[in-house]
Length: 475
Image 1 (cartoon, rainbow, N blue to C red):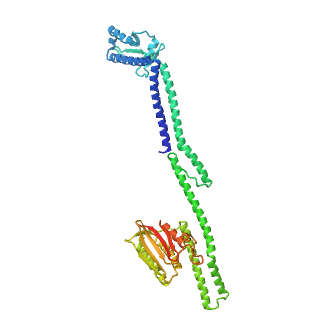
Image 2 (tube, rainbow, N blue to C red):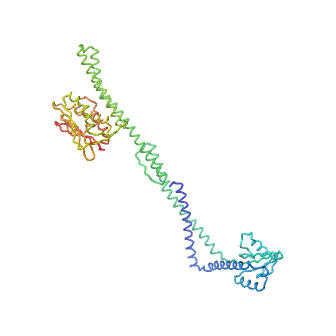
Image 3 (cartoon, rainbow, N blue to C red):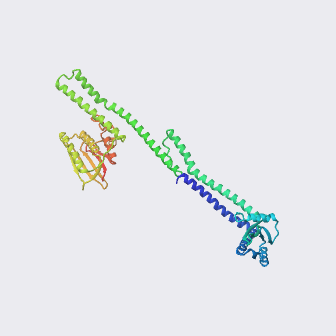
């Protein structure tokens, strides 16, 4: 519920509650007052007044169908006098505004006032006569002569007002007290639901403006205030992520600059040295010059590959490289991968084989180009460290209930146990003396596999070889 509607609803409930409690208090007060102070007389007076009003109305109803001449009958007048006297009331019969008969003497001014106030167009049914309040009613007649005839009925009202004055004061006091109490309760609820959370939001906003993004903002309060808390918390999280990404980007940039300057220094120095050798005439024969140029070219290719790896890793690390996933058959995909690398391995006198241990076709959701880069990096590492004459690499496909397992196994010299946990770190090389790559191959592979919501890990034993294990979800 919106705060405006909630505010009006709670105030309306406060008024209704105040009225209800006031009515209950008045009922209890009347009962207690009557019992303690013996005010039955006041109740009887009210009852008597109601009875007199009913009796006067009865007399009026009986007189309306009569003719005015019947009112002048002595017998009727005697019966009328008895009835009104029993009620402590009075009756006046007038002809052409002149008194014909009266059970009680009233002066001319009081009679004229009564006639005026009891006229058909008048809205009052009470009149003050000689210091007393009378209930007044009349019956009008039309004489044959054309003169007006009137029957006035007057009944004194003898209510005692002290009790009702006390009751009125009590009612006002109780309503005021209850209304103030309920408004205090409404204010307290709004204070807890709006003012207090807004105060805490203000403090949190001040901290955010000062750069402190670690303090979480709780969802509290009512309606729009709770939504404001949620929105501000989302903003804080987004700002924190933005600051983290900016810091990570800056660190990555510094790291890349440092790494490029460090890792590119050796091959660039070599290229420079060989070119200077050619310029200085050290390579005097065509064969020597070809050798120098070929070495410089290979070093340039290495530099280019290192730069490509650095840029790719940077994009992967900052989540700036989009993936294009498609559902693929695992066995068919790796058959293509083996076919792509078969010639290269045969040229290096190495064996590359695919071993399919799947019981049935397995589908995986992959980015075919990115996963191909993973396989290439792993196979390149295997080629580098397999030195045996009978060197072989096997790609073994297995499955569990929920995952597809790819094992790339070689029979190379293996990785020492103390170095195995670090092989997926960037720029880490098991054998630093063999500087043939950027040191980012397995780090890139790890980033890509994690981008597939998969896992990659390694097993190795010195002298026996290394197994790189990849786990991907089945679909």
